[in-house]
Image (tube, one colour):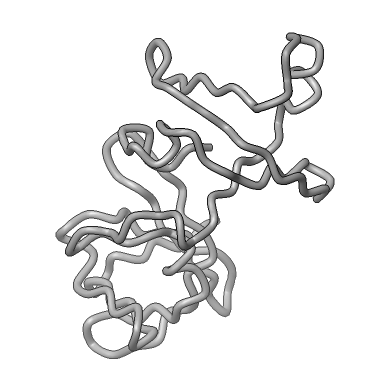
Length: 148
């Protein structure tokens, strides 16, 4: 899944790592461009036939951290938020951020609590503060909905 389809990170020739569903890793050079709708079209250097390209279906493209642009103020890379403790604004520890499900309008934060998974809609009303260096995420009281 491309977390920021409008970004230009892949839209120039660059070295990336492909990771197969089984965990195999392969360094390649890739060039990509926007496709129709939400699609991104990519070409792997040395892959010249549709059959050879099909072998990479389902593989993830991983861009080295040093190749990524710095996020703007108020923006964060998901991997920087994962595993951070989540508190409500009253100071109550709610759990740990386990995943972020990206959506059309809003992302959903998946919080691992002592009693299972909880969910927070990542909206300005619900997210009070994000402190990556301080390792602390704060949400509004009542923003966490527990899964059933």
